[in-house]
Image (cartoon, rainbow, N blue to C red):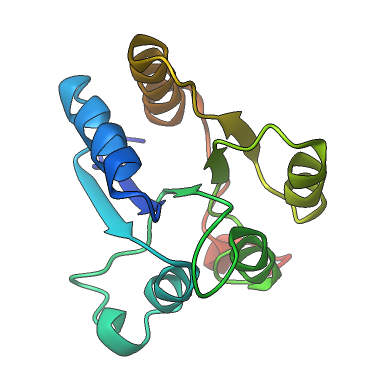
Length: 154
């Protein structure tokens, strides 16, 4: 990430899961900033910088989105569809982080261009290891293309 802090948008309606994810990242020093929203409508407002999230200085664009699929107001698959349909958002990696092992959910997520599909382990230690590996992947291994503004495809 070239020394810049990793910004994660966590879209998770279960407060216990959100706390577990946040603590796991903090314990493993994975992320400098996590922005948490609890429903799909808030996620879209944050990403499109509207309503309560209109100020880009307090609601910066994330480097990665962790998206639960079963969300109130707007379903996670619909959020994913809108992200990937947007020219300004589609390059942000989206990781489905869900309890669902359903093939239908997995297929639906990949059909909407999710970048990764991870099932949350029930075991706390395994969950911590998953978060550690996930953070290391995005911080150290993953490479991003230039910004859309630098791209002729745009």
